[in-house]
Length: 402
Ligand SMILES: NC(=O)c1ccc[n+]([C@@H]2O[C@H](COP(=O)([O-])OP(=O)(O)OC[C@H]3O[C@@H](n4cnc5c(N)ncnc54)[C@H](O)[C@@H]3O)[C@@H](O)[C@H]2O)c1
Ligand SMILES: [Zn+2]
Image 1 (tube, helix red, strand yellow):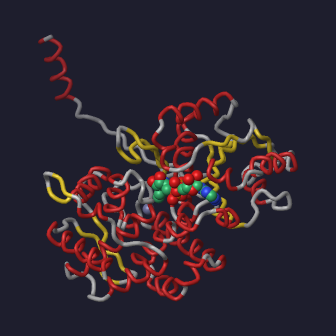
Image 2: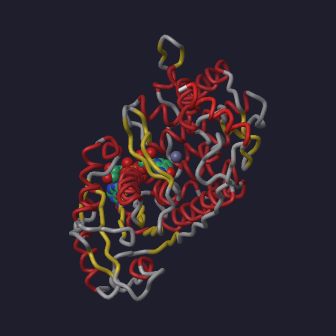
């Protein structure tokens, strides 16, 4: 051994380490389309989208439909099959349309992940085939994860069917399932092949789900676009009432701002610690978990937005009064901005504060939280004062009582 080490030392002296720098860039591109009646046979969008890279081939696909959507649209699976037959030159269903549970619980079941992965293998999907996920954000996350892991990635077409999925989660580059008690622990960053938003699906949502998805629009307006915020204020009544044109505009503008952030924010795969799109989310994620998802993601985001707006004022970043304006908009849209879990305490103090630690752990590196320096202007901070957070919580409680 000694002899070998001596040899190695000598070798080191003679030849310094050599480093080759491997470097390449990959360009990603995917269409995000808006339509009505995606699976009506006179609508070519779905067939043309799958065939966009190789128009002269027949494309095999599997479709997974959210059971909540299927219950509200019982004929959907048959419509997809009819559509595939009508466009048989371009499309081929590789297996019958599968209806799988939607909602957060579908992200909690490792057996379901394995079953779906097996389904793709049994149907013989390869890397040129397509997985089409049709449903809410939870189902898209689950099926996206399944598609990303089989054969190291099968093309994914997302068809988001909730407001939240159409204006936010569906247009992005992430997927995930929950594991070991942690939300979104296992997942990947993979841009989809395409995103197809059909506004007709939204008519099937109940009012609570429809409203829940609108908080993401308020969020992105607050950090990026003051004009959009004003538009939301002047259309809050229509949006609350379910006006289709107003909701269409909200979804498109919100999706556009999200896409711009991902493409031009300089960190599409979130390698750094900053996540401007997660304004209000350190509270939201914790609140969803603490209430076992009784508070929906969008509802928790609304509370997180309100709390961080008040905190921004208390810490001197945002002009007094802007917090009231933000809360008023959220309330007019239909959100409740108080939940008793906000004041629950454990041995370490306010339980919600664990959300800050978990947020940092999930991202890695330094704690980075987006707050507001104005309406339309996000600002990053690296510490939050617990006493001011407690004051912001009390303010929300008093507001709700008034
Ligand atoms: N990947 C990302 O970047 C990202 C971003 C934000 C949120 N998310 C995830 O999205 C999930 C929340 O998504 P969501 O708010 O869309 O809720 P959801 O997916 O939980 O769906 C809510 C309910 O609506 C039902 N449903 C779906 N479409 C329907 C329709 N058109 N008509 C009737 N019922 C319908 C579902 O079955 C479910 O019961 C969370 O798991 C969250 O972590 C992911
Ligand atoms: Zn969100």
